[in-house]
Length: 339
Image 1: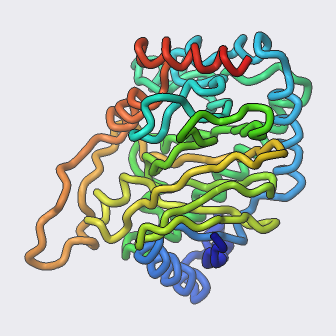
Image 2: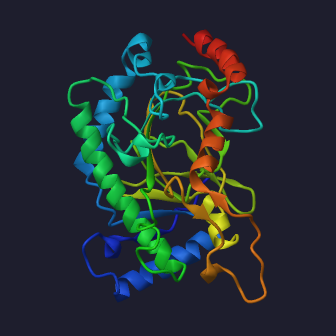
């Protein structure tokens, strides 16, 4: 299964604080539109994530995920009121068709830090609150540095997408409320250490939930994307490139002009794999409905409007065992079997 390279777009023209009405921005937006209509995945350069910052974050992940299970469980996501913390092996199932075993991965889920005085915390809005991050020395500093640069990269991509859709360049960045940035740090153990059950993958076939996702990794490989014709291709992430893909909400906004692609991860047989996706979802209270620029004369919206936050919660409920007691009991047994 030899994959062609994903197309590449330079998004430096959409950096924060510069003029975006330029030929470079217009050209990049045109390429984004063309690619997202065809496949829904691309690689970007000019994103603003420094290689040294990424490597420091990856090194912190190697240190944390090598800790004993009890140390990692001290920040278990089930202890969090806002879906932040450690997710153990086989306790999440992303492929709806796989009801027998969870994904062979472990993660730390995090997001923008919200203190007790944040308006959404005071209002009791779900998914807003404090992170649970490891106490490994240097982790917090590495996390903050990477998170800030990843959010800037996401804003560059969102400006490019907005321009591609004929919207004001800051339309997606400036939606009322606070964009939800769900930063996930993932460890895929090698298969010789955790042999998969039948049909069990590092990350089962799925589509992402929000508007766009940005991903960096350690270069080991394992990511596969389904093309529009149903064939799976292998995707490698070259140095200094970031993978960008569409989430499901874009189909509602664009009336299927942009449709998310299924993708999955096959754990490498003999090495650990680490990846760092940043999932971008509109503000919790944002109403997602067909954009005027995506509705042709005489055409009707194909989807009913949806509110971003409740929609995202429903997707988490379907995949995370700590939010479902029956699935949790089954997957706890799977995790214990793997030690």
